[in-house]
Image (tube, rainbow, N blue to C red; front, side, top):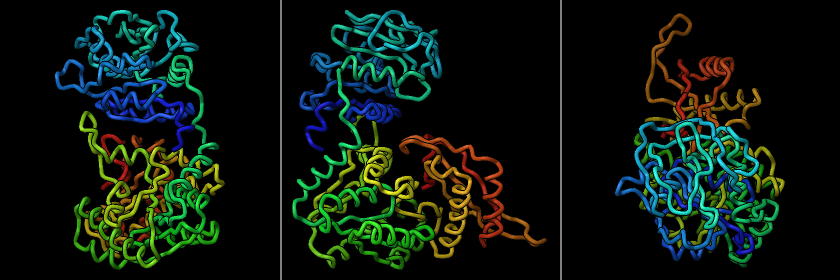
Length: 516
């Protein structure tokens, strides 16, 4: 990104909260750029970041635990406004000379916030507004020069401030939807306290990104592994706008695609965008390598290694390339990198590292700082069709991680047929754009059934449908019973080899969206 686009920015220090990315998304929705960094970031890096404001996230630890995560206390001397949320507020108290004690009553869930006195942080916020609490410790003594500005029934110090130093603390989470006026509170911090301006706008972002790509790439050639998903599709169109025919896209059919996937990608990018596109059918190679593998991680590694092998061979055949373009997103980066502190690696992502080192290519990742919804907005600014922009995420390993157990052509055919029915009915019901993902999973068990007065012993299909904003957290979708009944009737009647259909009602966390 250009410095002009990052003149106004906020630093978020992560103490391990499951809501840290919610904070970042809320800040960006206010059209202010921000970045998440580990709480252990050195002070000189914080100074170098030159933030207009710093937000300390919540976290699962207690500040009373000697091993709890800390930040450098000298950041409070930088004369930069600070907002501590939950654990962040208690850490401010602890580091600046106040006291935190275990609470007799843990406060979790909705609470009414009573405003005590005027604060710029609560300008325009109603008294008795609903907020979302989640804490087991409480502040028993404020640091010097701090005062209480709000309380709840169980928290006499639900919000604190030092208005001279511009340091604020909230015992509740303004970044979650359950805090009804959380956005207003964050806006007050950003605009009234930090005095940020709105410079993170999609219309200007397209122009800046094209300019940056041109500067980074020059006259060199770029190869892009195109999957047909939102991220790689928008990346391909953006890069093509920047460098034209110096972009070459490669679509590899690994035999693990959904029905009609390859044909749709070919038509869209070759016919509509006139982008150089090489389509390669390597399904035999992928499926042969997967034969007999049932462990999920081994599946991913086999697919990843085979992809590298095929991609490298085909790239050499196409010509000499300097850059590899990837649709890597900010959540991919964060999930794939352990901060060596309160956060840990959740899972590895296929497009974060690996391939360039082997192929001696430089990475071109225009979306490395963006969330999925921001990429969608970017695509709309470039007039990419809704069919592409609103496409539900599809995993890199494809149907291999939606078939539990052995991968065979027969099992792939069963899953494709069931998945096609689910997508057809979801779209027919007008729910496709309301769901983050909706798909079928083929289980590694068979059950007894009765069809036409005869006993059957056939496969089970599980249906997964979730709602989410960024894939970091997700709730199972409360689909109408009639729709679930249609799924079951059509799949059992139309898909040979299936006699039972079940519905997954797990949220993320504790489950993941994909089954493997």
